[in-house]
Image 1: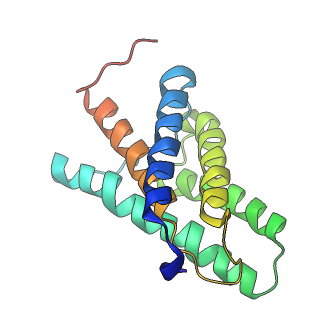
Image 2: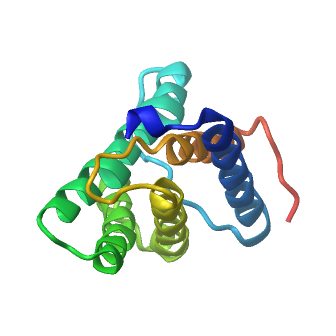
Length: 158
């Protein structure tokens, strides 16, 4: 729980996971998903993508959903599988329901869900609400990378 959070482990782990997914994006095109929503300003878009979305999604998918499932008796492996499936589905429906984005979205978001779930529960009691610090940081790093890439400020050669 909160008193067991080791920031000296969680912060570097989150940055490392984020960097791995940046490398996967730059080399294989694996993404989690970019919202196709209209924003009134670039600042608002970046704030939502790099701050609000990672915080809200990770608290929902890595803290509350697993906690509720653990409380009602869902075994660890089934809880993990539910997380791996629900996270990409959420991104698919929330960010446009586009078949074009679905192929890499399901792979990238599913892979991220697996890694983020395991990073959150690698050394914890499953029946306690966990604060997914590493997952939030990794998600923010990835979304910031994608936001910068989509904005045209960064060009990645393929």
